Amino acid sequence: MTRPGWPAIIQGGMGVAISTWTLARAVSQAGQLGVVSGTGIDTVLVRRLQDGDPGGHVRRALAASPWPDLVNPVLKRFYRVQGRHPGEPYARLALWTLDTSRSRTSLAILAGFVEVWLAKAEHQGLVGINLLTKIALPNLAVLYGAMQAGVDVVLMGAGIPREIPGVLDSLAQHEPARMRCDVVGMSASEFPWIHFDPRDFDSSTTAALKRPAFFPIVASNSLATMLAKKANGSLEGFVVEGPTAGGHNAPPRGPKQYDAQGQPVYGQRDQVDWEALNALGYPFWMAGGFGSRKGLQFAQDHNAMGIQVGSLFAFCRESGLSPSLKTAVLNDVRTGRASVRTDPLASPTGFPFKVVQVPNTLSDNSLYASRDRICDIGYLREAFRDSKGRIQFRCAAEPIAAYVKKGGLADDTAGRKCLCNGLMATAGFPQSRRAGEELAIVTGGDALDEIRPLLLTGDSDYSAQDVIDYLTGL
Image 1 (cartoon, rainbow, N blue to C red):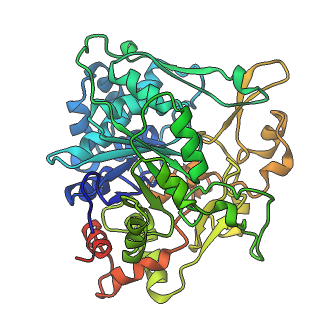
Image 2 (spheres, one colour):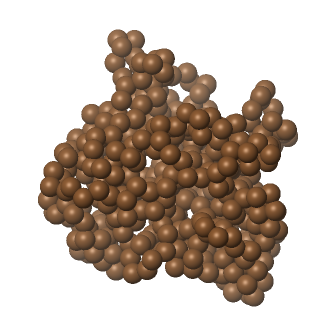
């Protein structure tokens, strides 16, 4: 079922720290495209160090980086030989702004390097990195670190990443790169620039880096067409992701409608125009509901290179999802009780977000309501221009009074969940509070039941290789 050129299967870049280097490496070694998540990876880096760096993997990768002057202060500040004491909070990082410090930016560079370097170690397979366009501020630094580690593909969705091809061109030459920062209350022509200059971190490097391929993740052929025409550099392919995929979904096109469970309703305008997509002439992969043998065959019958698969890999042995949550979801899949809800309110971004219903997580509205609202990681904050013309940041999941004081509407805070803390907890890095540890929030695609064939052997779990063998019919 494979075709010449790119692999038929792209492993989804689930974040935070679900698509870890261990998962990406396993998929890559099996001949497919393994993908690490770059979302929140700087926080993940320092939390791994504070937990004692089990196995020494982070320190091994840091020792291989070209920036020893950046590494030493990080180890001194964050590495705990014995890990944290029970109940001890993780050290909190400064939140990203347009004027983020050099030392804070260096963490993002190192984190991108570490994750890709570990994923690519000791084999020749392809490794990609997935980033969210919406989380703009850290992306240039993370990309540069990933490129120093030899990343092969960059995948980006949750926005319109038209400036990324030019960014990759610049970073490959160690030249300054920039991209716009969306600001509420400003016109697009006024948006400020996010700047990153590799020479601020290493002026001695002269050899050009490999320029990775760029695969935007789009929700429609119309967005793919726009990017093909207006991106500021080359694209090498597309991932076309439908609304049944896990994580963030693009909002439905047209008037808002909801079903009896309060989920957004997608219609004909949200369907892919296969003829138009093929006419673009780029390789493409289908995502969202294609994670099966039939899905792969259907995609390839419509001239796709293959499929991107998230949920099947998210709950496999090598993923970074907390083992107890993995077991709970797989038990529900096995017994037919697994349930996924497309929550139109959960994400502070305003994008619909898929939530797997799991006890003792933020899918329980009573537990969500009892949590003290706090925003201390801040990746999903939006930039806005205040009444004095200054650029500030706010999050619809932060304390309501603080959000309103910053000019936000109280109605926009209803149902908003702190995905930053929730997803860190899902990956096994819950922040400790006086009231206890932060609760997880689990995401997965609508087609979670496609996992069931992998559990027919009676095993309690399955591997990334099992997923690939199942999809390819081996």
